[in-house]
Image 1: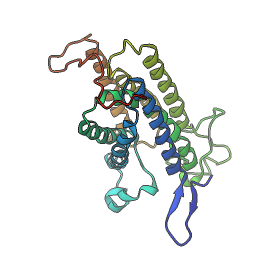
Image 2: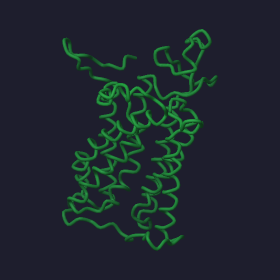
Image 3: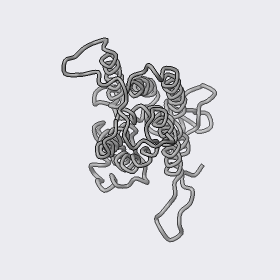
Image 4: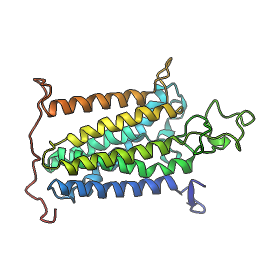
Length: 291
């Protein structure tokens, strides 16, 4: 399938499936987050105002993380071609950078409007997983985010142009008989499962659960899933001299932070400089009656 839907004749403008699918994923994730905000008693319309800040920040962060990740792994492409950092249609976005910078943009919006950031963290947790999962089919179209060769029946073919070392030799790894792990599909399935778990917890224990608990659960589940997926991601830059990717380090830190977050939140451990925080969300005075 051609990654480009169409190109306007006489111009360099092309509409890519990746961009369209990403836009759809953001909108659907926004709808899930809006529902989550309303469930917590806040005005759901804030989500769409928040996205005006969060999406641009997220795109910048996703690109920067991808570029720095590549350079840290020994790549020289962006060092030798710095202007290509701005070439977003070329591809190359990293989810962790999108979340980190997107959260920064969201925090600016929340602080400016004197809202409780924890409401949006908890509402966004399952939405992030669902949005991320919905974008993964674009990786299939682009023939990226695949794993090692496999004999399993759900393996996929990758053409020579999109192969990475050491599987570029079409004589040793013929197109018709060589199949690869669809790592993007594994991540998609895990994300849907993790989102379902978080939504079930949020609804089943709505009156008992403490603010920011769902987000802490996201840190753990997202990190755990990524640790597993990294075994099927030979394309990820490694720490020089090791077989450990930088993404695995980030995922491990997410799990650790999520666990400590929960332990402090429910006062299983006590750290003088870290407080569990309020037991309830702080709702704004402009909450819509429809919420």
